[in-house]
Amino acid sequence: MILGRDLAEELTLRIASVGTLAGKTDSTHLVAPLKHFFDSRGYLLVDEIGVKDGKWTRKEILARYLLLRTVVDQGPDIKGIRMLLVEVLNKLYSHDIAILHEPLDFFRNIDTVVKVVKSSHESIKKARAEEWAKAEGSTPNRYSLIYGQSMRGLVSTRQVLEFCISRWGTPLAVPLILEQRGQSLVEFVERHESAELMSRDLKSNEEVGLGQVIGDKACHVFAKAYVHTYKMSYSITDAGWSPYSFELPLDSNAGRVLFGTGWLQCWADLSSYEKWDVIRKRAGKGGTDYIRVTNIRNQSIPKDKLGRSLLHKYDTVVRHHLKTRTRWSRVRIQEIPNAILLGTEYGIGDFDDGLLEIGLKYCKNHSNPDCGACPLSDICVGHTSRPDWIVGYRT
Image (cartoon, rainbow, N blue to C red; front, side):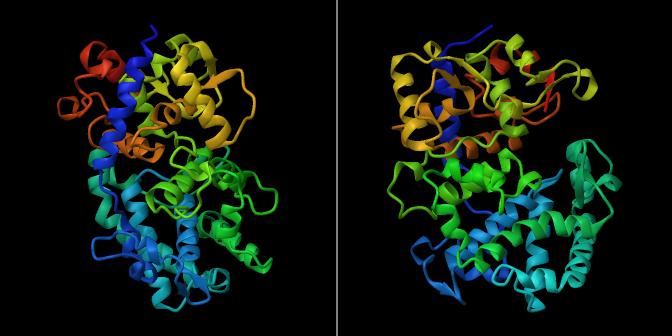
C-alpha cells in the first residue's frame, strides 16, 4: 500500500504548523553562565550574540554549550538529562570551574567533575525516577542517566568517569583543540558550505570529529539548534545556511509519527521498509513490529514519485541548500520534507518541532496513545483507517 504525495505534503505542512506553536524556550537560559544571554522570557538576545563574554563572544560560548548538550542529551529521560546538564554546569561554575569558557578546566578538575556529576545524578533520580517509571511502564530502580558505549550501543553504567570523559570530555575537547590552533568553534562550524555538510564533518572530521560519541541524528540536532532554534547563522546569507540546509533529525518520535500517520507509506510500501530494516517484524515490545527509522537514511525511491513541481524543489534543496550532491538520479526519502517545505513559511526545524510535540504529547510509544486530542487526527491514516499501524508498531 503506497499512499499519495498529496497526503505527504498536507501532513508535512500540518506538522510544521504544529511546530511553530510549540514552546521555543528550553532549559538553556537556566544555565548560570548563560543567563544574561537571554531575556526574561527565556528567548536568546540574538542581536547581542556578538558581544564579548570574557575573551570569547556569547555566540562562541553558546555554540560550545550546544555541542556539549548535543552529545550529553541522550538517554531514556530527556527531561532528566537537561536537568543534569544545568545542575552540573551551575555547580561547576559556582566552584569557578568555567568549562565553557575554559574547557581545560574540565580536565584539570576531573575529580570534582566526577563528584558533582554523581551527586547531581542522585538528586535528579530522586526527583524523576517515579514519574519516569510510570510514563515508561518501568520501575524506578532502573532509572539512570549515566551511560557508556558498548557493542550494543548506549547502556547504563555505574562508571561515572567513563560517562564524564566520553560524553562530556569529548565535546569539550573540540573547542580546546581548535583554540590551541588559533580557531574558534564558530569559525569551524561556519567554514562549511552548508549546515548539512557541517553536521557530517562534526562526526567524521579526522582530527576534531566526534566519531562514535555522536550519531547522525545528534549531528542534525546541533545543526537545527544553530540554524533554527537560536538563529546563530542569521548573518549568513548563503542558501547553505537557510531553514532548509540540514536534514531532519531522525529519532524514535519522528519514526512513530511518520509511520503512524502514513507519511512514510506515501513513498514506499511496507515490504520495502522491511527490506531496508526500517521495520523489524515482531522485534518490538509485546511482540509488536519495531520501527528503526534511522535506517531510512540514504534509502531512495525513483524520482518520478515526486511529480514535476516537487521534483524541481527537491533539486533546488539538494544542490543549493544541502549542497550534498551536484548530480543525482534517485530521491532520498529523508530529504523530501525539505523539498515540500521550500518556499513555504516553515523550515525543517519547524517540522522537527512538530514531530517532537506530537510524538511526546499524543503519539506515544504504547498501545493507547491520545489520538483523539492529536492535531493530526483527521488526516492521520493510522487513526482514521489503519489502527494496526499504531497499536502494532513500537519505536
